[in-house]
Image 1 (cartoon, rainbow, N blue to C red):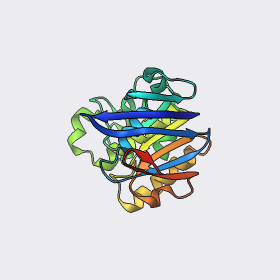
Image 2: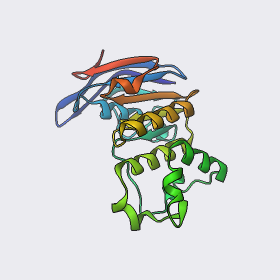
Image 3: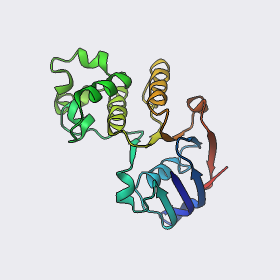
Image 4: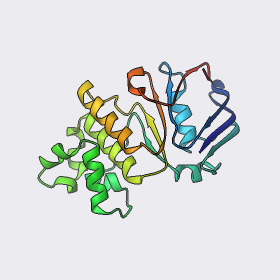
Length: 209
């Protein structure tokens, strides 16, 4: 499903990912830990097709070109980008999904109770309310967006970082229920968020341990 061979990447001549190789089979749940600045998010962006490796190859579900890889994965980044559109449009991103699918992911992302308090519900325009959104609400919208895309590969970058402990536990459980048959790569510095994963690595000096 995912194969990295001798992948290298650097910023401003500083090595971030150093000759890294990793094979992930379909359905594996892979956790990657590391301190801030260790390159966890960079590695995830390489897997998401957002960056191109300087050397080596990144293959995701048979694709090696970043643009093609990006179509194969769903991503939740630590700082989600919301557009000046409705909540519904921020989840569907212009795709035509069945209403039942949107309703399902809204519920799984623990958005239902909040959306029910809004006069326009899912059609609430975020351009008017962007400053009122909590980090947790923005993160849950991003999680619902990733679930709605329904890719075979789910990439998570600290998906619960903006949530309190109670909400983070329920949202992470919902993500794992949703992704039971999917391939997951989850980068975090919190070991408790990786309970039940297939393998857990530590990223140090650009290498996986």
